[in-house]
Image 1 (tube, helix red, strand yellow):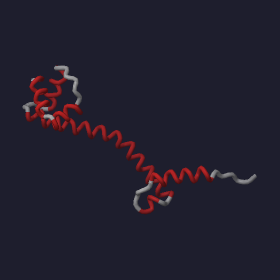
Image 2: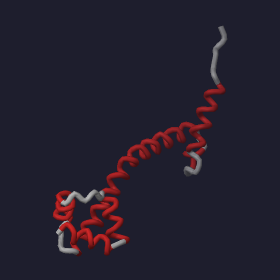
Image 3: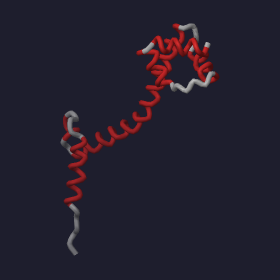
Image 4: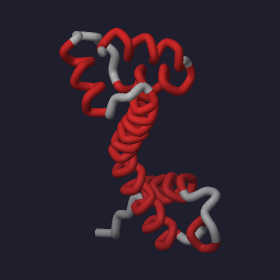
Amino acid sequence: MPRSVNSVAKRARRKKVLKQAKGYFGRRKNVWTVAKNAVDKAMLYAYRDRKAKKRNFRSLWIMRINAAARQEGLSYSQFMGKIKTSEIGLNRKVLADLAMNHPEAFKAIVEKVK
């Protein structure tokens, strides 16, 4: 019985990976074995960093809230504790945006929780 190979599917698989490797430097963009490894690594980084992005933004928001709260005479932890007890339903993302772009609104929130 003759050997059966599915060249169409194999070529499609390779074309897909090489298309994903478009823009890479050197052999990473056009040599199948090198491109496959580069794309696999890139996908791992992308998966990992989608999670890390959330952590990075949260830490940025905390830094901004802390800086703005300290200008009003409160530490970050004191401010967030008072926000929770006064039941103001603003999250860190909104508070950081107010602190950066609308300092008078942030100051009003601080005065309300003091």
